[in-house]
Image (cartoon, rainbow, N blue to C red; front, side):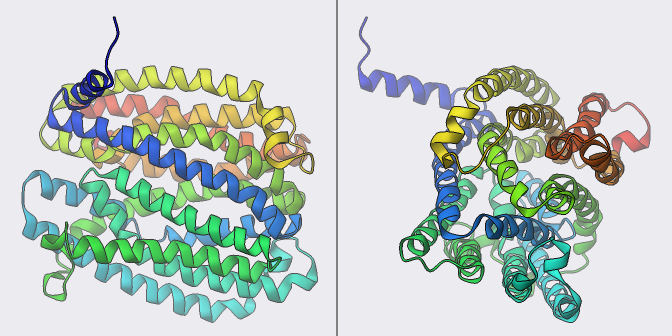
Length: 458
């Protein structure tokens, strides 16, 4: 029996709107995010070969490593972004716009102060930082690296404040719009790098300027547009800054800050450790494999992202059955992810040759290690997302500190002492995350049944 296009569209609309409003909204966001993130990942993949045309391989490896380090400062918002996300979602669930505006205004005030402090601190210590020595780079690149580090740090500090708009969109359960902002940033980067590669004007400094400007201009324009239109009722103003409300943000935010910092150390160290233990050139094959498998990580993150604030809403309303049903569905999605990991691994070598040619060799062992990394991280994230949404993150804070510290000596043991090379650097965080894959399901069960000690429920 033939089905008309109109009937097909109606069936899709029916499935997208079936269920309660929370579920329907989550479905719509997931579909939109797959489309938007797909475009974003496509532009991200195109950026790599163009960057290799624009910069020498060692320069590109240095940029990847340096930007990973500076990115740490982009997360140093003392967790206020995620604290705002949860508190704002609770205020929205209670339909309290005055409280919502107070949280937004106070968060902006806090982050502007933090941003100014970080800039002053970096200006003070920058003359004493030897980036070339730290990154194991040629001495002649020392001055250029210092300039690039300074530009990148300023950009991340500004983005620290502008990034609040992403927390607001997540609180309103609009992650698809955040995905569109990320796509816009990638598109601007792609255009800029294409221009540099076409006119042979590439250098570390010119490369970093365009990349950093793209990360600033998009959230800046988005903030102006949204606060003068859709979110005008909660737009930040001086009158609504109330540091008394900052205590609630800080109590939750500081815990999120420690959590963020620990995971940044865990996830961002491979570039640095590979460069330090081996050479900046060895960062390139790792980064290529990472970007390839990151397609799956991003796809699974798209699936999980809308649920964080939805969990906050469900937990506030005591809708525990909705959370349990969602967990079962996400288990099924994880099995599908495993199938795709196998398929991507089987086709990895052919894809690498088409993507970057034969100039960079990515061994199959590296692909296998990345596949394991994707699966362990995804399983842990299913439950970590629920814990984050409920705000019961004290145990997660303690465990994240332990595994982030454990990761570095473990990476040294595997990569250098056991001579596993860069494979050992990748397997180290995977083994650490595997620990959380056992702990978080236990904690989620205790949260939903309100059983266990204070550590599990705080």
